[in-house]
Length: 353
Length: 195
Image (cartoon, rainbow over all chains, first blue to last red; front, side, top):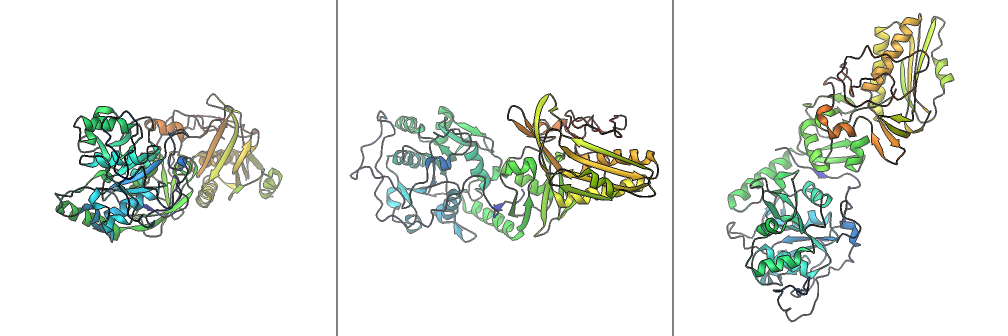
């Protein structure tokens, strides 16, 4: 497995929205009243005492189109983020949301990552968790429909903001990456119930790193009314846009203390091996990367590894065999040993003259 | 032996003057021009982009190699960058030598090597509003058809192998008439549209 990249260069391809992680908790967040996405939904429960009061964060909402890049027409619903933190973490025997990786909890990491791409990010909790300090600092969406499991969190979000689609993220994905979110958003299909990755393990759709569209709300309600509980089965039965993940590891979830320790070791090892490289892009690759240069933190030790990572991130169409590479302004081999601070240029097929 | 880029129209009179030499009995130039069609598409403009630091290094290496292979007095290559219109000059190569034979040979060697080795990219703009990076976009869709880069920067196999590397997209000025018999590289399946 090659290393992971974090970007520190200019101008992301997808408009980055300022993080909302710092928004103070909304005092005494009421349970979100269920707003039926479609009035005909048979099982939408009666709303609790408080009338419809969507959990609106303190910041003004970004215009809808900001988070609806590419495929979607201008009319595609905006995408908000939903980090699921209402699970019982029974196999982990600890709250998975508060497991720490390199000084940050998984909940913090997921919210911060989502906030790089989405105008609003919420944390999904059960009613009894709203006051939990690790969760209360974020805008919350409290379960407002009966039942158990992630499907309740997804339905509650869809009910709270019927105009929006939701990029739903489980709280047990320590390898979640920019590449994964960028691919989801870039290849989103707003006409489907959802846009989801195909799991590398079983080939089935992965519902908890996926974009759920508003149109799924009514069908989800009907599905749950028919005793359906599993969002994966829902996607199989009702259809979704399925993507082949470019970053397969991003979908690896952890459930046990052992898996947590392994993930920690893996992330720590990468962090200690990471170095900064300067990358310049030209011609077709500049257009596909959406930038002409950037600085990346990477554990790639050769140009070959680095190209694999960047190809996963940006979806470059050129294969490595079609390129040359230069390191520090001179042609280099693909197995050249990279050093911190090196400047790397991938050279697409040339066409002078 | 000089290689450089120009942001504006190439001053051929000044370039020629740089190659004057009392010992030179022959002078050959090649000009690459922007042509109005490529691979059946109507081209309206070209855009050149370069990785200049490495391009100048590689260009100078080519001219030095030319001087080593052929007894030339002077050689100069100037390549345009930026957006060019039809009939604009994209590249100028000049070689002066004691006798005409080596001047012809060296000029041909230089333009062929420049096309294949120097990191310069060309975007074609088409009549229908479309555009595309030459040698990149068609290959990307069918990478198996692409001639891979040579592993070594100085290897003979060109970066973008083409059956008509001589001048499918540009007009050759007098001396450098296209001939294909020197081509030893595998066919790429897509012709480049340049000098």
